Length: 289
Image 1 (spheres, rainbow, N blue to C red):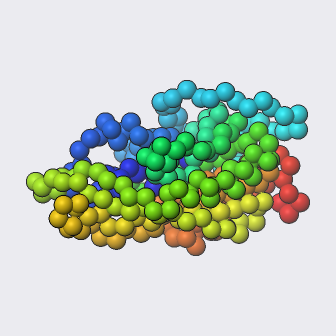
Image 2: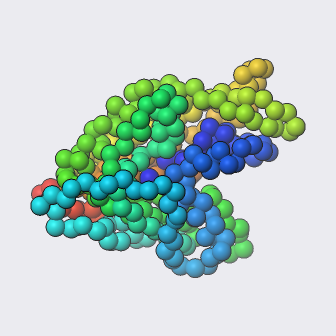
């Protein structure tokens, strides 16, 4: 629900002087997480100085049918206290955006989803019963302008039909990554009046994450420098790997990612805090909660 960028946007992030064509195509590829990033940037501009606000992002596709409810779950909704709270962060926040969903897929990385689509493979995400998402934006010093760099944390919490479904959302992630072990993506670019086609190589790695819950994994996405396919010229600097934490407690699964300056150690600490919040809201939480 880790950076939600198409190939063109991925290169643009490190090429401030590059203007990329095809915004309609880029928007057409966007999913719920990229919608939240747009909402976040817009809301900060409109609501600078406001302590908190709830925003419902538009849906661009109908929800799939909900799974048949089992007899055991006693909690159905996801309340806001199941999410990370400002007190869980080491940095002050200025705006807190949230939204709820029904029958949403447990999306971990939209770029991975794009790779699978490019290879003719299904998305592979498992569907939740209900979900709740939030974006926390950093507090800015007085007189500074807001922007996308103000994103501190993005979090999605999903309630699955059963605990087994929650477990599958984690254990099947490696299988989704395997076909995209080394994915070469290509796209057009325009830079200083020059146009061409560039290529970058994307890789993903799944590692265990000790989160204190019933399961946890860390998905790391790396992308090479983009190069012009005709000239071989390098178009950008090395980019930082992006990390996504996925944790499970009972029938709840949470997906966490940080803003551009977030570190793996910081993500690890937030994963622990997220698990503590999930423990109080999960159906059938483990005894160690």
